[in-house]
Length: 463
Image (cartoon, rainbow, N blue to C red; front, side, top):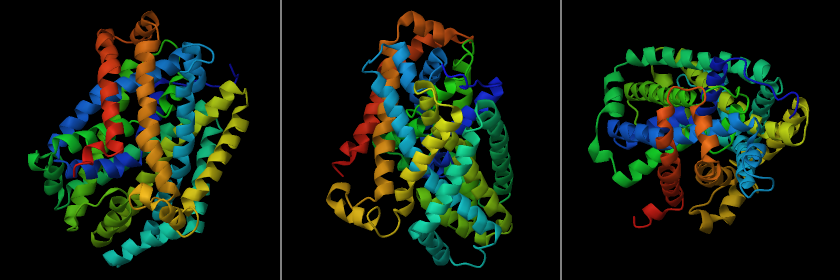
């Protein structure tokens, strides 16, 4: 084992780092949108059930693998199966997924950083909604500016990971995660004072059965529960490998899932009151964060202060997730190639930086943008650029397959004695063991299969 692998300095440090890995941009903008779109409170109930029955068991399995093997995904799967085992493909899938996801994720993080600057200089003040919308369109199409922010964000991520587990990832998790929760609290207190808070609360938690479709809404809840926890990309296997062997993974998984869900719910309680106060309707995904909310901030008292706080929140959420993604690739070279942490981080970080440049250029003309969309129009139902293609394959195929592989590996390949001992180590919740195995063997595969079928349009074919 490489001498500089490192280990978490404390349980709290690990919980903050694992929560940071799970909490990402999707918690802040995607969860509020799909909750409101799918019936509010009834969707929240279904989402919580999906977290408990699918997300939580996979998280426990990933941490179990990492802590047991004390290795990154490729080596961990090999050590728990056999040399040259076909199961090693699962480890490779995790490393490749993390590498690809970070390459385009950092571009979106760059948008957040750019909007922090715009907010500070008051760029949204006295702007019409059309002008604010045009600001994002201009940023999306500006390849040079996107490349610059992408590079700056990757350099920041590399600087943290190269410093190691305790002095880098854990130290900054102890700074960034409390700051993130602090920003959420400040924004929540403000949202509670707005005229739109009552309407926003009812929009999120009221049971609007007429907006809940049993098939599509349940699939949305299932997909969100899976992706919001950063499952299937090897991040939690890698983070788990830095745990002491006597550390329990059951209670930690429950805490991380709870904190991740709390962030998503708090984000919804913040965003919708602000939007409704400004008389705006919720918009989808990127538009919610970079168009609708800046419009709202430009129209309300205190918006000049709230806007930079919100985009700083987005940046922190992106950074904590990016750190875990880079660590997956870095840990592979430390474990498998015996590279120093410095060499592994710089090489992998540099490779991801280069791979991310086409995504940064995808909003404009050229081979990675308009030309790629035109050339693939018949395949992609309207066309996708480089950014869209990477996002589609990673979110709809790599992560679900990774999560499915983790569930099958732990429940069917790992020996029962080792699995039971590993689950019950360091916990008073050992009675959950039988149920955990059954969920991994039967419920999780069905859930992931539904996500995959939904990704290829099986459930929308008749529409």
